[in-house]
Image 1 (tube, one colour):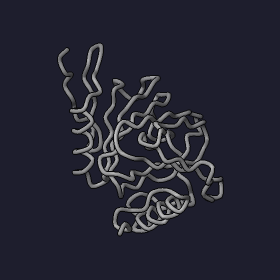
Image 2 (cartoon, helix red, strand yellow):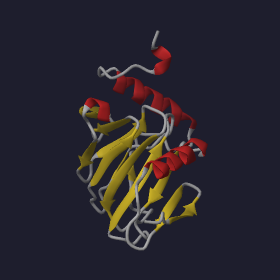
Image 3 (cartoon, one colour):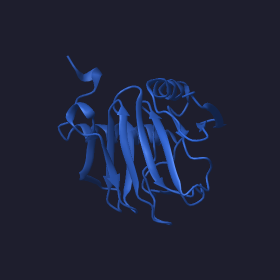
Image 4 (cartoon, one colour):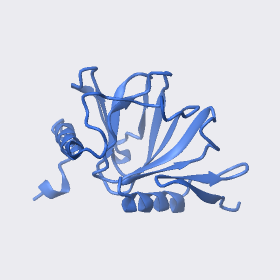
Length: 189
């Protein structure tokens, strides 16, 4: 099987241009991790679906530590989402409507601990962040994708690009780690 051509569809995303089957192999995962490392946002998407109107959205989400994905939910229209980790370590966090961290929804997605992913119901406030370099996950959610209504961003969280976003992410990571999760590499003695 020939590897399908990859097309750049935006500054933050690529797409497989396959007719029937696309491989998700080590080369593609490493390429997306490298692209995320070079990105100012520290993340990169790779789509397997053809276009935004497709009814099933399938993608790789490569995330580097320090990338801020603003807490959001998929409520209007309601959309469930599944995340399967392919490489690295990922933190998944849910919140109450008032922005309070939901400790029962803090999941360390780490295959070395036997946790490979999670499934999220529609309308749940959530975010993810990388706890290891070159983290790559496979995500699936219903389409079509309409950027004007796909995500409702949490009003209690700073927008991406706001100077407070880095502080918010660091605080969130610290709270996540206090739940008996691994310490940061810089904290190890």
